[in-house]
Length: 230
Figure: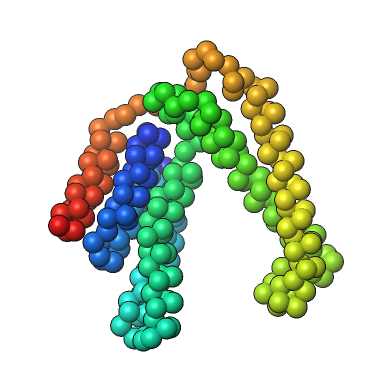
């Protein structure tokens, strides 16, 4: 069990990560940013997330260096452009994944209400957080059903029978996703999510010293990146 950070801290750190990647002066700066997020993951008790995220980014980083130093011409342009985009997006996805893993939907909503976010933003966000795990579960069920019909969603079948794979995979997934979204929306309304009165929550949301230190560390790193651009 790691340190529990305020959900508002995680949202602010995600915003700082976005700004850091926007103004990153070098590839090495993005590498250190990923390591900083990994340290935050370790403090949050997400050791597997920190290890796998850092390992995967190490492969991306090595591939980027290889494309810049060893490739030439059109091949270099294609790989460098693609990996450059991945380097920009990866830290934000790394931080967002940690935020979703370590924060419950009720804590997110309590944090949003504390900073006076309107319901038209809170409600879709809450439905989305409930929606993603259900879609993942439906995805596994659909793939199991496809294997029973000997239509595995492999690269070979996608190339040889693309229409059949799309029909058996994406059509049921879209139908299940549509029904799930409707059910979650109705359930949220039934539980009074549209009630205009102040919402109570069992989640204790407090901005403590550890939250301040985390925000301070990421803010300092952002300033370092901005100075490096000048």
